Image 1: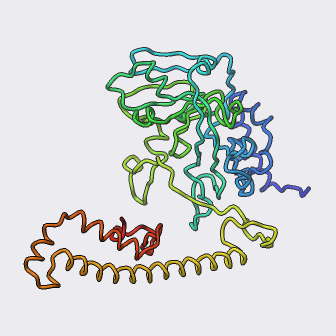
Image 2: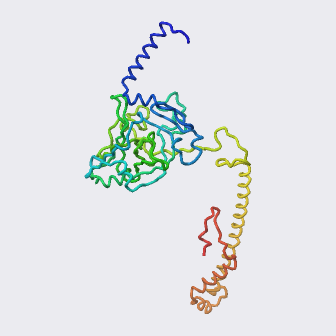
Image 3: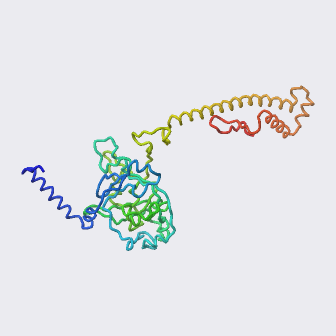
Length: 394
């Protein structure tokens, strides 16, 4: 060990004293959580140790379209709270006619729903921005996951609570809180229309009980919205006339441009579509005979595609030629039938008047019979895009 001089020792001592003071201000349960917290499992990248910010690797995402629980990314604002499922209760209060207090068993006894939804952190990809610095966790590709969530629809509880007409927003209060008293709690709200449409209160994840890291015993799942709307460790659902005035609603999670007031910026809500090629991986190699490519086709696939395209072109050329020949034949046929019906080709006025009195159905039947002679049965001319031309349909 290199000995410290006086100048190096005094700043080190000051930093250690400040760290000890900060640690002493943290509650005992939080210090215990820090001490016993292990690192992330395999195929998760640790972006922040505590609170947990764990990112799924690209390889972990590529195993299946459903992300396994131990591979699902983890994002927490505060430490994971110690919640006892046996004593936990969910309250539904605010602008309702019948406030509710439900245990986990009571929620499980209600009609259950299972649905697959994607969760993505709003900051996913932040670490890839070509900027000098970006605030927040430096996620790359893996702050996203797809899971099957099981639970009860929020609309079921709201119907039972008899929501009042003036209620326009649903607030989610949670069990997690900051270790320092001056830090604001994490509280989000969603419009009542979204709450009644498809929002889920989930207690199962991929067929298993919801893990504590992902919000056990109960969490909200707001489909199609970024993950911050899907509050974890929910303890209370409040119906209010206005959206939440919490810091994470008023100033946080907003599309703020340079010089813009965060409170006036548009809120972050719906997920923006992204895509990522999973196989082959970045820099990976595989032989075409032993690896089925799901992205860019290999040489064998390209040759087969060219052969199919050539056959398609030949077929379209034959159809176009057949259509032109038939068009000429039908045009000539139309003149002949018209002349036979009107008698104008023979210059006989009496015959002309006699022919004109023939029923129109006979002329249509004659044209249909002659068209069938021009085209074999079952052949229907098509346009280049494959659709059937109305001009030649009968």
